[in-house]
Image (cartoon, rainbow, N blue to C red; front, side, top):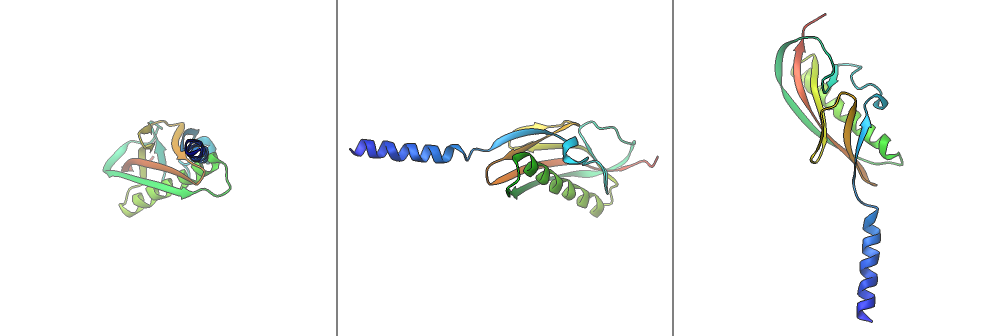
Amino acid sequence: MKRTGMLGVLVVVALTQAGCATQVKSLPLAAAGGQSRGGVPVYFGEQPHAAVQSQIGNVSYSVRIARKVSSPEDACHEALGEAVQKLRAAAVERHANAVIDVSTRFHSTDSHSSTDFTCGVSPSAAAIAVSGKLVVLEAN
C-alpha cells in the first residue's frame, strides 16, 4: 500500500513538472519588427554597416520577462525588444552611434546570426541575453 501511494505521488510530481520545461527557440529577427531600425542602429551578426571609426567597448545584458497570455514567440519578441532597448541606451550613454556584431544567447545556446535570434521560454517567463560592440560608425 505504501509503495502504491509513493508511486502515485511520484507520478503526480512528474506530470506537474512536465509542462514546466524551458524551451530554447530560434526565431526570425524579421518577425521581431526590424530591430535594426529606430534610434541607435543595432546590427545583428554580420549585418552590413558603415565603416567603424572607433570602438567604444563591449556590452552585455540579460532580460527576463514574465509571460502574459502571449504565445511563446510573442514573449521572446518582447524580451528581445527590451534587450535591444538596453543596448541602445548603453550606446547613447557612452556616445556610440551604433551597436554592431550583436549576438543572442540563452544559457549555452548562442546565435551570431543576422537573421535569427535565440530565446528561452517557459510557461511563466521568456529570457534572452544579448551582447554587442558599441562603436562610432563613419557618416555616409
